[in-house]
Length: 241
Image 1 (cartoon, rainbow, N blue to C red):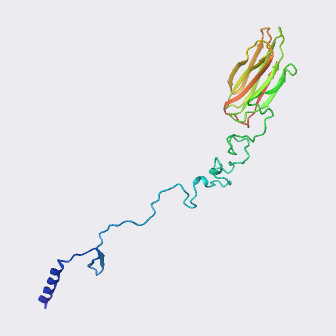
Image 2: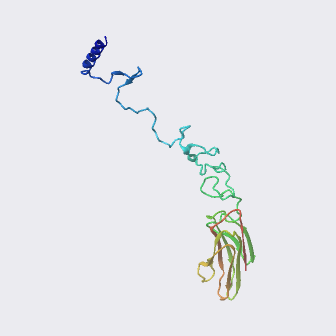
């Protein structure tokens, strides 16, 4: 009986040597199960490999279209600081050193300076002949602000005068540029800058007419900031003849 079984098995193996085990052939394993003879090493899991991080993963919106601080405005709607709810278009732009309304101008809603606008054309303080002492309390809103003040000096031939200009309360951590100009001359005095200085704290100009020539005309003092101007810190200007 054993020799008959061996003969049958040998015959089957001999016949099988000529067979072609195709990719669809199932081969029994030792445990009685089956193993796929497919040699295709397909590792495609159909996973989304999109690495685009330009959109919000929750809403699909671009970051500039998301209102991060909850103030009702996104960056694409003009919010220039979308991490601060107090900063957005239409906000009150008071004296805080921040462009709160995102219009490109810092503190443009600060309390008005009584002498503005005087960035380009000077505020006329009148004639020192009428009032020989003039005092101004003002401030530079920011480093782009310029304050100009005009006054008139009456001077006849062989008259003499002494003019003093005193600027005080300039912020200690700021630097202001002060310029003393002649705008118009009653005589032949040259038009243009007479004196100029940089200052913190206080600054003084002194102009003495000792020539006996006619130095009357229109004069100007210009106050501008190099750095550190703030509408929270005013300065005092005193002019006396």
